[in-house]
Length: 346
Image 1 (cartoon, rainbow, N blue to C red):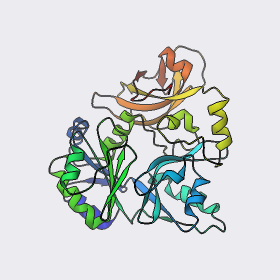
Image 2: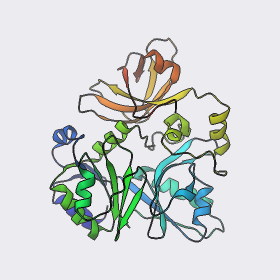
Image 3: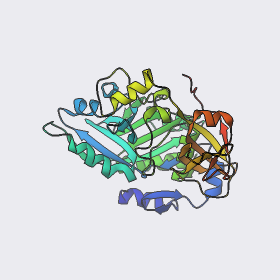
């Protein structure tokens, strides 16, 4: 986290731990405000920059989505897969100031950067940890687009679209309420934070993750890397996979599952009424069968405004249909499946 940006957050009593804003001293009030206008520091996401004459072609051969569609006006969800088609990292890819940027959890940044560099070879591509280049913040809520516009910044209307005003980039991302990422130099974003803070609730990183869960947007963490193929976490349903582009690591397996295979696991949204903490990677079991094998795993989990936890979970479809999937063991807390904001049959 940039020192000047941290000084700005400190003025608002941010509770910062390991470079992540936990809360602003009012965790319960922040959780209750999740459906209102909120702003959030996104320093728990890092940035990898990619620049050079061969960058577009290089990235096109590495990722699940069609990088040719990324421009200063259009971002995209994406996945970096192993040769076996398992997701190593999921991220948002955007283009700003003559560079491509991958925004992904800081816990996965260094290993992703190291792996990508292995395949650059003679290509004219430079890959760097760019987390200190740009400050990132999130803004969401029913009135947030107007509030951003009132500060003088162009606000994209369509999901994945981007608008640049001066040195600041605003990206529309999926959300059940309008939701945006704002990127720019620290000197430019401090006034943005100050302007939005007057009419919004400042929240910690967990609230932003909760909004992702409500949206059905998976974020691969270090605990779940190489656990899922893209379709298991519904990436092809939320514009994170292209089946018309060329080859990339794992492409044959991803395509075969789409056209020839039967998907046995899907990502569902659920609520778990439990006082025990729930974490990404936690195993799930059938409560109606003596089968001791896991039937799925938690992808993301955060405390719910209604108590317990809201989660995204990859589950065997047959077990999810039976409605008795439990966390930890066959006697653990049950997952109450809730509706995703998109269709699984799309």
